[in-house]
Length: 132
Image (tube, rainbow, N blue to C red; front, side):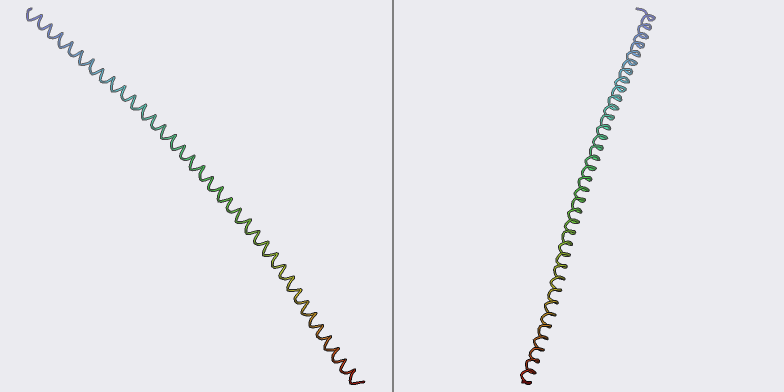
């Protein structure tokens, strides 16, 4: 082999090496692009999963708040009903006490009237005894 053939062979080796380096670089680039694509897809999946989780948590919190609000409304209704019941009972007791007081006042007035009549009869009896 002469120097020209050797030079040609060396140039061909360099070109082949350059082509191999280019192919390797292209392979690395394709691998990197594929890796980036997978990473992006995984990031999207994680973002969607996080979003779904947050929506579910917000729904649970909302449902719990509604349940607490309903319990509060129910407790308010029970307190109101108990208050109305106690108020009605107090009113009935007040009416009964007024009636009892009125009866006591009537009995007291009647007793006083009977005492007055009795006193008048005693005085009239004494006067009748004297007149006789």
